[in-house]
Amino acid sequence: MRRLWLLFAQTVTVGLALWFIVASLKPEWAVSLLGGSRGKPVVTSPAQILQAPSSAPAQDSYREAARLAMPAVVNIFTTKGARQPKTPFMDDPLFRRFFGDQQEDRQFSLGSGVVISPQGYVLTNNHVIETADEIEVALADGRKAVAKVVGTDPETDLAVVKIDLPNLPAITLGNADQARVGDVVLAIGNPFGVGQTVTMGIVSALGRNHLGINTFENFIQTDAAINPGNSGGALIDTSGHLLGINTAIYSRSGGSLGIGFAIPVTTVKDVMESIIATGQKVRGWIGVEPQDITPELAESFGLTRKSGAIIAGVLKNGPADKAGMRPGDILVAVEGKAVSDTTDMLNLIAQLTPGNKARMTVLRKTQESTIEVTVGKRPKPRREEQE
Figure 1 (tube, helix red, strand yellow):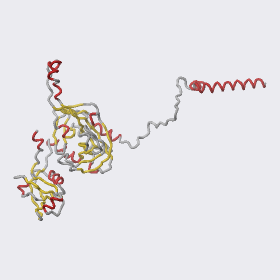
Figure 2 (spheres, rainbow, N blue to C red):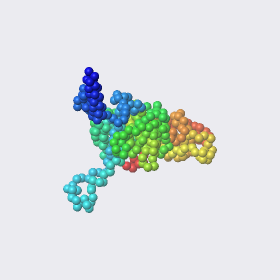
Figure 3 (spheres, rainbow, N blue to C red):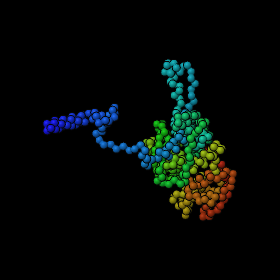
């Protein structure tokens, strides 16, 4: 009996030794011997790796805002220069050697736009399409269409073009007047032609003006990266609603330096509706040349106030001249609304309806008086008249 027990113990010892050798060199054999699934090798990792479950929620993500707005942001390709007619001579290497490629007279540029109506109206910057002979709009879903200009407004750098395609995704307008400095915003466009791109930043400032970019300025400033090709694209809030149209950057190198400007949706809506209805934006005008009050001018004129706009010149037989306004007068109010500077004056007068009479308060020397001016229609910018 003792001999049998010794033989059993030796057999078990040898078996365990063989098992450890097999488990170390061929673990899949060990699993198979234990009744594991055949044909499914065990993959071992040299380090412990933690993997999040596929259903884990994304934290601090703006994917939903981007998903809602991106389909409505389009790429705009413009062409300048007439297409040369195709002739058999163009295929002749000798002809092309002496006269060059006749197709090279055409110039191409790109920008962005936003679909603001399912009827095909697309909003963009005027400078994107102002010199174009042909305009093509490319949607995010791959569709393309030739666009026709509905109207432009160079003084705010806005333009509306129209395409004829079904089932167009239109963006939802937001409330720019509720935006505050520090709000998170996303800029969507086609920078450098690389394709649709989304960048993130915050509202850096509101009501930026005196920049010399446009005649009428009331920009949203943002540090969301805006680069060439983004012009005409969308600045949206975290709900995917349109806050403004990206229009300009401050840059010394041509790239983004964290200072970009967007036209607020309040201005956009006003100009857009006027262009769609009449083909242009009509503004009030009284025919004066204003100038801001500086400390030097205040001292020269003996002024005690620093707000208002000095009337430096009056157009002969213009609305202001006929109403009795004179050079040297200081315009302090339009329809009861105070005028702080020339920008205020331009904006207040532009909102007046041509043909109507408007009450304006002027300071002449030390005496204030109210005059009635029959508002005229603001002339087109000179650069537009010359075209």
